[in-house]
Image (cartoon, rainbow, N blue to C red; front, side, top):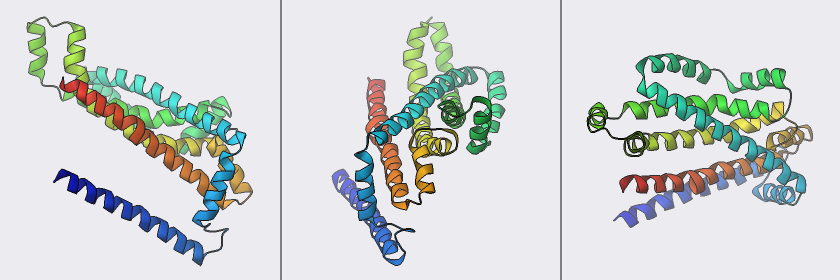
Length: 253
C-alpha cells in the first residue's frame, strides 16, 4: 500500500514538472527569445557556462559564502537558542531582537554591509546570517522548551551527568527543530546570496547575473536560475535529508 502511494506521489510530482516544462515551451513560442528563451537555448547556454573556468570559480565563491554563513548561523543560533530555551528571561530578551532582525529586508543588510565593509565576501555572508540565525535561534529555543520539565527534575534527582543529559535530553529534543530550521534557512540562503552578490560583490553567481543583465542575455539568466534551483534541491535532498534520517536513527537507539 505504501509503495502504491509513493508511486502515485512520484507520478503527480513528475506531472507537475512536465506541466511546468510544457508551459515554458508554450511561452517561448509566443514570445521572442529575448523575452522567454526556449529550453533548448537555456540548456545550450548552461553547457557554455559550465565549460568555462570562470564559472567554476564563481560557483566556488557562492557555495563558500553560503557554507560559511550557514555554519556561523548554526553555531550562533544553537548557542543563543539553548540559552533562551533554558532561561525565560533570556528568551524574552532574545525573541524581540530576532523578530526585529527577521523583519529587516535583506536588501537593507546588503546596502549597509557594503557601506561598512565594501564589496567582497562579508556583505553576502552577513546578509545570509541575518536571515538564518534568527530562524535557528527561535527553533532551538522552542525545542528546549518542549522538553518535559519533569525530566529535568528526574535528571537532577538521579545526578545524571551533563554529557548524558546533553545526549539523551537536549539533542533528541532539538534535533528535529535544528534540521527544519537548516532546511528553511538554506532554502532562503541560495536566493539571498545571489541578490547580495548581484549588488555587493565582485564574484559569484549573482555577480555573473549582473553582467548577464548588462548584456541582455536572458538565456544566461535562466541558466543561472537552473543552477540555483539545483543547488537548493541538492542541499535539501542530498545533504540535509540524509543527515536528518541518520540523526533520527541514532536518536531511536
